[in-house]
Image (cartoon, rainbow, N blue to C red; front, side, top):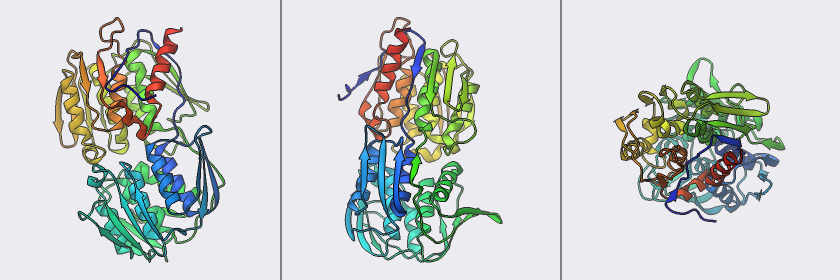
Length: 446
């Protein structure tokens, strides 16, 4: 059933209780889709994410002639790898607002021995940076024509394979560009040496390198030059069965919920300490400093707060796990003291300007906000009720401020905050508001 727009958030009148089954990681699902398509053999992804972004990726692979079968109720995806070939020699690929799909598919198409492929997205996607990846692929022999504006979608790729050798990339605006280049470089005619001209967010690149290894490739940082990656030319092979981790970015909202509503939640399968491919797991440390008790075990994670809200406001550099900064920004009005968030300038070029948007929405709610290019400072003031949060078509605004709305501002359960276009959550977490309501109802049954 479609969500009401705007969606009024019903506060929790009892401490949160229950279990949250998280969706699979978007970052891992989309990388595994690409690597499975490039590999020899059939790959079965379990606990996979089904969302707008992953459906766009799977659909594009099918248009390229690579069989992909989706079992949404079973959360399984089967990819019949083509060993580096792209059966379709012509295709039009629509990537919507999916930056991951846009960058990964560009590199995939450029690696093909031959073919002509057009890639485009929404107006917002067509304004997101692609220049670093396009220039790097061109230097390895790819023919890429920007159809409207240089460095942006829509593009036409005239594939002739990648020749290998040395290449430099500026992926400072999105580490997805470096990840895309790393995955495609295994199929080059010879080894590829990738020089990184500007610093990138390391956790996502580390994730990519590890997934390349699990699919039989070799990509690693040069021990002598940390800013250089070496990718060995070769082939990918399917690992057969591949389990997707729960999404650490999606987990951030439910890890923060007890700070807004009190209580205790279980998140099965989640890893925030120790072995995980996801850098966003570091957000758990931020919430611990804000007063949440987060305990990990082989079964997953439990988060609790004895009394809702009231924790100490943290100051933290979010550069390495910036997809979670909006979660903290949204609950900052409930914390003691000024919350300082840095390392977020690059998020101005994501689905929307997340820094500017966060500042506007928090000021609308009566908060004192200082905004700089790379940072936000949020000092709590009495929350202003009756406001509608603009999401800018960005799923993370909807989910982050949805958590804030769970706080019982009036003390009697009256809704005080609404979310515009809540359906934008379909990008990564279509069931978010259903899961939130399920937890609220479970808390009432205690």
